[in-house]
Image 1 (cartoon, one colour):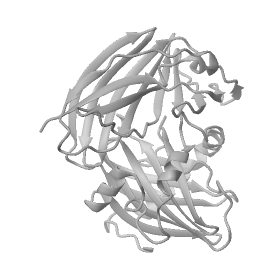
Image 2: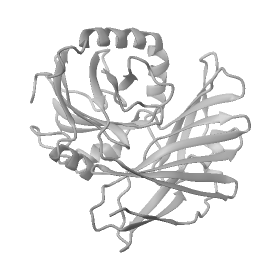
Image 3: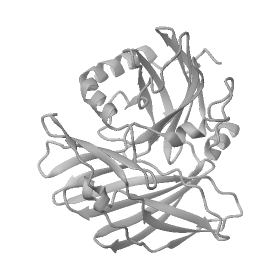
Image 4: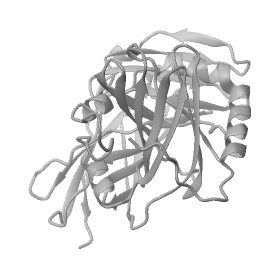
Amino acid sequence: MEKSHNQLNDFPKEQVRSAIQAGIVQAEEQISNKMNSTHSYKVKNGKRKILYALGSVAAVFGILVGSSYYSPALASSLSQIPIIGSVFGDSNLIGLQQAQKKGLTSKIGETQTINGISVTLDEILYDQNEITIGLKIESEKELEELYFGAGMDFTINNKIPNGSSGGYGENIQSPTIRTAIQDITVTEDMPNAFDLGLILHGKNGETWYFSTPIKQITDINKIPIQHSENVDGINITVTELSLSETGISVSYESSEEGTDFELSRAGDIEFLMVDQDGNEIISHSGGVTGNRLKDSMVFKSNKKFDPIDSKVQELTITPYLALPTDGGGVEFDENGESKELDFKGDSLQSVEFKSFKVKIPQ
């Protein structure tokens, strides 16, 4: 396991870490509430728990869907990783494997030890879909399951973002050794390069701080789509498909009239993708962010898929609803007061959207 951190000599790591710590102090309580409230996320026919953050600006409200969730899917992807090796290269996620083999990741290797627990920031990938972070964790004593909760908080250029989504999963290799992968869904307000701050909390009050400059990979092929339809009051516009060696992402916006997020369906959209021969491209879903604007709910997301090879000439994409079967939520008002929300999604009805085709440049 690497114990050194090779960065640019002029990068002010200590100053950045201090700034991150100062910023986190101001929002620690609010983030803690979020982390405790959002360990589940929307999956196909799965459970949902949503955090609603009601903004103070008149008629405009924020929603954070599936933020900082503990992801069984990510944990499963780590199940094949040996104790010594690359977290990305040894996972069963094809995009991460290719990124590691082709040198598209940023190797970090910085280790911090607190209370006998050593956390190593192994490597990072920033592609068109998301920021993916690999961790190696070694402890002198046995660690409880979910010792690190739903994973890391993060900052962009020393500031906590207004809204984000992503997932966290672990592979427990022994009572004292585990690896972890966390992903952060890329949103349109993220710059191509910035200083990423990461904050990991332990169950006994430990806090690990990391900071590193990251840069988005190049050679991303973006294909405009602008496929729009309205089905049973759900508006959806697929704006773009982007391709890289690490995977495919489908960007969309959706909206629906109403003010109750628990009764909304526009945030439950997923996509089925097949090539010209009918082979399915595996989906890895993706977090959803949205806003309550007047009497409507507006959502945005990038849905992630496995990379494709040069044989693929055309993709057929079909939107569908992945309605939750259980869940709930926590709502915060403008004063920071929280209120538990009951699950109402069992009354939601599915709909059928139209398929559309995308030609792949050769």
